[in-house]
Image (cartoon, one colour):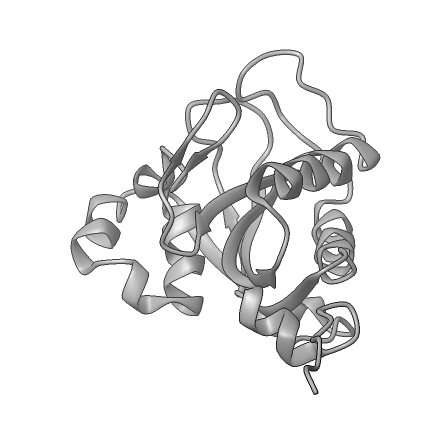
Length: 180
């Protein structure tokens, strides 16, 4: 007798098909901390997606932009969504949080960036992975190094050491959001 494994009902089947994804979170308008907590909760609730961990919470000065300081973090997820579908879900979360795009690097209520999609390299008109500027930004590399130290080199961290960034809270800042 052949058994069919259904990823919708069998967690092991979903894990087998899942890709590990790292998402950069940022906000510098409104209640930044609440925006990031809500975003982590929303990420945890995406279909076919499991929240595996969240970095510490950082404060950083804007890079190549103006405006108030950002709050930043990185989340690691497992998802069986396709990259473009997942990007659309992230953009829907940004829009729901009031994100507007009046110009490049404008201040934002919520910014969700796909940093890494497993070991894939993607280059489409709407999505480039690894994120094309992540190696230039302490607010990405420092929290990413907490979750995936093997993905960030000492040389990369040294290259961004001069950027203003402070740890505000450990991973407990998202208290109440279940992670695996």
